[in-house]
Length: 234
Image 1 (cartoon, rainbow, N blue to C red):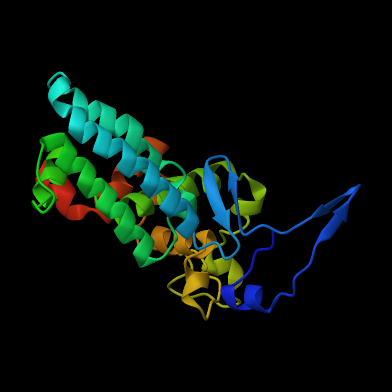
Image 2 (cartoon, rainbow, N blue to C red):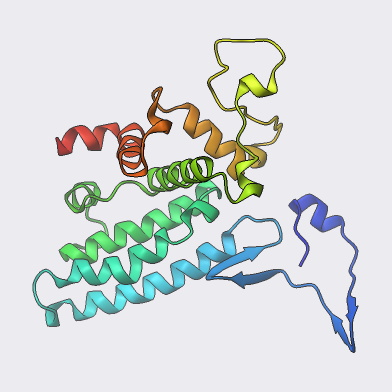
């Protein structure tokens, strides 16, 4: 499989690789640990597969809800749908707005199934009562938690070396020395990659938060990403 931008992949001539007695043909997508990778890393194939599986489960639950004990539906939806959406969200959560909109519809459908609402009923209040935050915010929080863990442990080394402070990258001192250095990127796709996205999110946190232990840091990250929801809970 060849990875690259859509423009470069279109320019790539057709080829095959000989391995022992076999001729290997390049593929356009491949599954790895439950995540579907495509050549341009748009994650559209993964989101399509995820949507297909989750919608199938939700339709089945919506038909069977009258057979289930009270209060059990939320647990089943969380286990069979929400957990799938959250799985590896740090990896595929840097996709396009279209991907997020498609996944958010799954979350909205899940809330309607739990409460027995119709297709066009409003769901913002339902999501709030379930304690579900918007999917984009969920991806940002997972990215922050993952980045802090990498920085604290210094591993995996390939990812830890992505995070350097401005004081290490610049020759002269500035007021932004305490912030993480953002690598140059002239394309929006470059700004969505983990090293840039995670550093930008860390820089948006209040001073001193990153030094906290994992559990307090996760709470502080959620409060920073979803301040309105945190205030409402209080």
